[in-house]
Length: 81
Image (tube, rainbow, N blue to C red; front, side, top):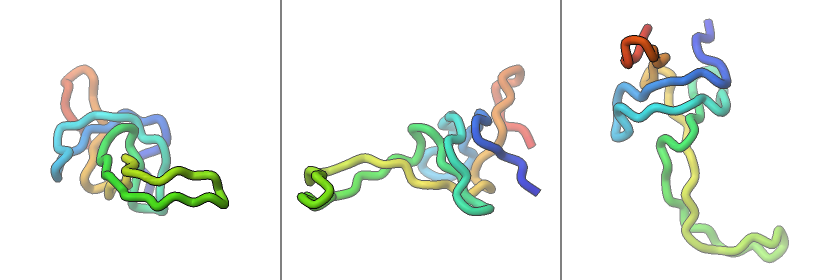
């Protein structure tokens, strides 16, 4: 049963991003979600002249497991079940 969908506002309950709120941008598989501006990591990219991509340090979002997030309730300002 899927309890989260794209566009839901969620709050992170565990991990280094605990307490961060954001909107689900994409579901990754059955058990992971991408949240807007949450769980950002820095990746060192090599330049790729074939795709015209410059090199450097790039920040990108990584998916979180659905057990580490909860739907955000704006009335109580907490995560719900």
